[in-house]
Figure (cartoon, rainbow, N blue to C red):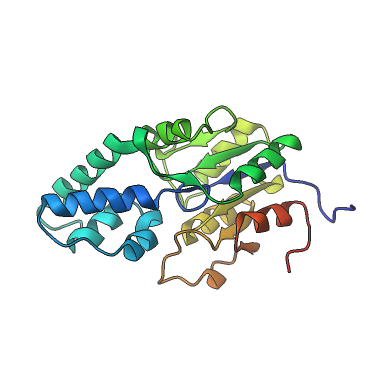
Length: 228
């Protein structure tokens, strides 16, 4: 097969909603948290759509509070504590066919890694529990940089550690900030339409180079196979 462009020097993934489906963990945590405060939890669908926006957004969703409200930080910390306590018994899982994609990358000697806004204390054990640590070539979290996504710094650092040019690499994410960060870093970008898409931001408006409805679509894009 004649490729129209070279294979990427590396492929980097966002974590929640792109590489791994962590929504079941957050549904469980928020249900427990709401029970502690004797309130009704939001629907799993609402939680699913909010996961990629982070713990603060999930706290807002669960309690209807803004970050400036009294009690917000206490509830946020309670959410983080509960989440941290259950990581070793996580219900998170790779998205369907993601393992096949990672193996195919390895077979072609294309390093893959994770660039996430999830803190290292949660990201590292999660990758370990799922057996991904050994083959993940780089993990960049907010702990490693001065600016998180949508700033390009985390992606540029990942490429530097891998010894590859950003322009020769691909970033995959399920949130507008992922695509913004990738574009700012000069990388090709793939929007993961199977992930936790924020309802207020249509994926067609993100200006990604490609929209993947599934992990198989990511593979087809990388190897320039039929994506119709």
